[in-house]
Image (cartoon, rainbow, N blue to C red; front, side, top):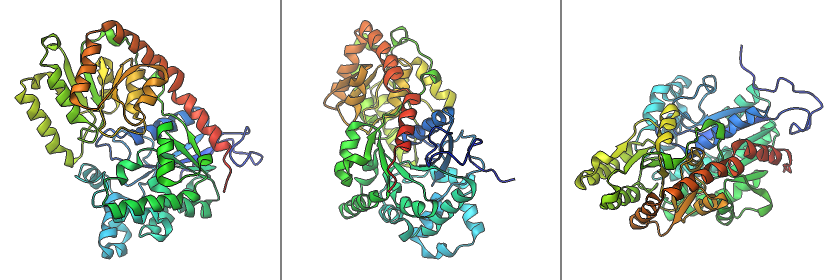
Length: 452
């Protein structure tokens, strides 16, 4: 029997968006990373899904491009739409657009998807400008047939009250979905610039223009920080009344708290291991720190996974640590999901992910803070907004190895400060970054949508 995703108590007298008569039926459309690296956007969406379900709503995750995580257990009967290999070949080579259905199924098989997830260039826009533009064109792009497949599947298996797109690069889906499914569409805003800005200028301008045009098809936008709400409004020329800010969060109950001052002096990094996320700044800062004899016991732990294009970069960082004579003090964790991440978070005293250009939020910060780990971040992007909301960390500038090493040294020299920040970090998550509170805010936005 085919599985139908709908509320058990669905009644004919509930409001168009659930109202007080029952929970909502929500579709979350989420681009997957394939589980090859720590994907903040995937994690954000999955945590919201779990919390919305705990509030009594029915939520279906619909993955695109690649699977979400390697340890997902609730997606076995949901296909991955817009399979990464298939749409790439069809975009580049028109002959593949006439390939039989069995060939698509082969390309979208788990072994090939896993291979694609780890390939160099599979998760950045270089060389994929035309694909990005085609996706934003939606029903008018080369993937129009795939869009209709997704909509038909949703229409057959679900009875959605609202569809939530994971980011604005998916805006091309909205118009046809609204036409066929007759439901409001909501779109999150987070780090679209990280994908768009590396493109060649002509493509970059075209993409921002298309995103601005296609934004008219969406009923509400959800920015993950005030910083990014303002940035996205400028880049995409969005009407302010359509933008809402809902900070990211985690469930404090999922994280074991202990005061960081009682832990060994170990510094952690939790993100994809690449240059853009500041890993070189981190490694260089650690080399500087270890030149001081009073820090001879300090260790560095790095985790978050990688893709093929990160391999040489990581090798170079390890060589620098070797040449500095401190390779044995730097530990690279292979595992970063599930139990691996929990064990990682239990032992860190400080956490830093010195992203070169800042970030729209950084859910790794709330994971660290919920575990009682003070965060040490550059004064870029939304980092000051997060840390200054209720404490729990230190902001430094400029984003250089020297400034980061000094920020670490000041804290490591002051255990009382670490103790204070550790308590503040946990309290900040409980008060401001609890996913259950944020999920309720999200539901209120769903219910108050002015459908256009």
